[in-house]
Image 1 (cartoon, helix red, strand yellow):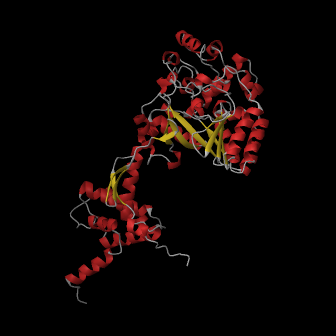
Image 2 (image 1 turned 120 degrees about the vertical axis):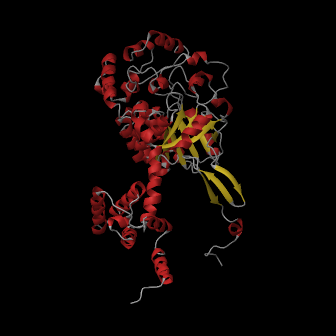
Image 3 (image 1 turned 30 degrees about the vertical axis):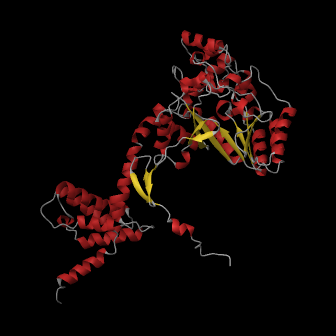
Length: 531
C-alpha cells in the first residue's frame, strides 16, 4: 500500500483536529514536538503511571493530570511526549475520551488551559480574606466559648438565674442602664466610665445582659460595645441637628411615607437595646410607652383610604417589642385590607434579646404569612452578633415567614474593611438571613458623625464582593436622603453603536459586550402570535 501523499496527510491531520475545539487543538500542537533527548528516570516513571491511570480509568481527572504534567515538563526541561514514548495520536485518543466522559463535553484543552487558570486566579483573590476573616472579624459562633464565660460572670454579678437569662422578661428586667452596673460587667478605664456617665445624662443607654455578653473582654473598640455604649463623641459632635426624621414625612399619626406604594407604621418607641448610631437616637422616649389602639386606628384609617399603598413596614423602636396580642391584632387589621399585599417587621431582637422569639410569636408570624407574605427585616452589623442562639432564632423565623432580610449600617471601626464586610455578609447568609441593604451612616444626626465612612470606601467594599462571594450575599449600597438612593458604581464604561465596554468589579478588567440589535427589538417577530 502506497504511503499517502503530503496533501492527503495534511487532509487526514486536519480531519482529526477538526473534531477538537481550538483550546485542545492548540494544546496538542504544543505537545507535538519530536523526541530530542534523554529525560530523568523519575519523570519517566511518573509519566508512565499517569498514562496508565488516564487509559485505565473512566475519569477525566487522570487525563488532565497527565496533560498537565507533560506541559510542565516541556516548559521546564524541553522534553516532549515523544521523549516518553507517547505518540501524538495517543494523546488525541485521550483528549477524545475526556470529552466523551464529561457530561457537558468539556474538552481537556478548555479545562486545562482556560478553566483551571481562571479558577486559580479567582482563588488567589480570596486568599488574604480567608487568612484573616476568623481573627479580624470573628463571629459570635467562633467566640462562643468566651461569650459563655462572659454570661456566667454577668449572671453572677446581676444575680440572674438561668430562667431569668433564658426569658425575655428577665433580659429586660436586668437590662444594664447605668454606668455603675456596666462597670461591674466590663473592665473599662476610669476616664472611659466618666465619659459614658456624662453622655448618659443626655442619651439613653440600655443593653440586655445577653448582648453585653457578646462584648469581648479587654477590647476597647469592640464592635458590640461601640454599638451599644454611648461615647464622648456623641456630646462633642452635637450641634444644630436636622429636624427629626418623622417631622418632614409623617402624613398621619404613627405613619411615615416617602413612596406611593410603601408606608411605615412606627408602632412603638421601645427597643431592647438603644444603638449608638440610631437615626431616632435623640428622639427616643425617656420612658418606654405602649400606644393606644386609637393611635394605631388613625394610622390604619390613613392606610385604608389610600389604595395605592400595598406594602407596610411595622417598626419603631422594635416591632418585636410589641406584645404578641397587639402584634397579632395589628397584622390581622392589615391582612383585612384588600390593597395591602405584603408586610415587613423591623427588629433587632434576634441579636439583642433572642429569647423574645417564642412559639407564640412564631405562630403569629406564620398565620399572617399564610394570608399575605411577611418579611422580617433585621440589622446585623458585625458577625460577632451571630451566635448559636441568634442563628437558631433566624432559622426558626425563616421557616415561618417569606424571608429574613438584613439592613446593615456601614460604621467606622465595626465593618469598614473588606475582611469585616465580606465576613459579615457571609455569616449573615449562613444564619438564614439575606443581606439586603448596606446603609451609609446618615448625616442627619451629628451625634454620631464619628461613625461615618466615606462613600467611596463603601463603594469599594460592595464592589469588591462581586465575583468573590455569593451573589445573593451582596447587599445594595444605599444612602438615605429624602428616600433610599442607590450608591453603586456604574460598570458600564462606554457604549457606541451597539457595542458596550463593561468593567468587571472584582478585577477591573474591561470586556466588550454587544447590545441587542435595535431593529430586531422593534420587530414583531415572535413565533407565537394571536391571529
